[in-house]
Image 1 (spheres, each protein chain N blue to C red):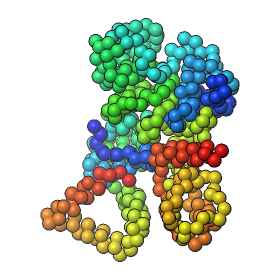
Image 2 (image 1 turned 90 degrees about the horizontal axis):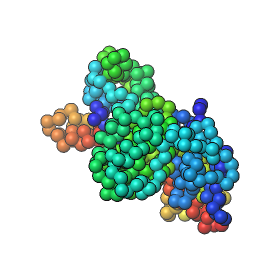
Image 3 (image 1 turned 30 degrees about the horizontal axis):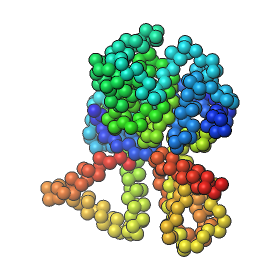
Length: 145
Length: 304
């Protein structure tokens, strides 16, 4: 089993989707500093993706400092890594764009959208009183971009 | 870049039928190439020419650096080919068949064979004739993987199999591809699987290669476009070449643009439909690319 979840969908490069899923798992704390990261072989076979793609994913994540290679140990999630504002922004960009496009498609105004975002934001600030919304958010966050 | 497969103007006729024509196909070493196309497009004919099961009637194919027509047993021991699994000898048990094939290949890897047997859950004692279709395909793949070929050619490996078996097959093939510079050439209708596995995709239609390119580039270029038209009038002029499978329902228009560029597409839309609003463009799964090309080709055939 892999320590992060990704449901690959067509049309978007597998590389981007896996990178996104890993970043998300790190930012959300599902992958913690020091956790082992799967090998290229394991990634490729488990996800049934091209080994070259799996290799590119690991190289890119090592390159941006999210993962570290320790000879003899393997690849681990970088210890010194704290999610930067830039990473968080990148992570959200696609999702925000999608929500905006969907809203426009259904002729919702910016205010409607902001209101909905605010409502969900508040609901999460008070998890005890709004468990239903929290669960919905959990389900949403499982989805890949 | 080292090429495992390289064809020039490769062609094959069967009587009056041109099954494959002017095919220029290259498979780089270390690459997984997915060949897709409608039934009767010439995929099987192409693969069979590459492994010297049938001879081309024109052009040339080089496989592992050698003319495909001159491939001998010695060369074929470096190529794994999985075609129709019903050709396996029915009277032999799985274990006997493996023992029978093993001495034919100097590179046979017992440890790898053992791993594959376990991964594929194959019953060693059972006779081939009593295996399910899925088990037979897995056995055929095992026999083609265990000698660690440099080129693996798979002809419709997934057809008629359940998702679990498909997953096992893909994973088995990946076990091979991971460990070095092996190349895989796979023809399949399971386009979602191809989209995961392949780094290069070719689309064959009526014996002709319509496109052949890295999957990432293809995903960059293709977009599904949806536009709201100002009215229900017919357009001024004909649609651009790059628009495939144009559909209209009232004021909504959809098509797949195979050379999408926001500015250019906007410009074309405005030229044809003055007063049109902005369009939306979204990523296109390979399955949709396939359908768009197949429908387009059918439409053109109907016009001929």
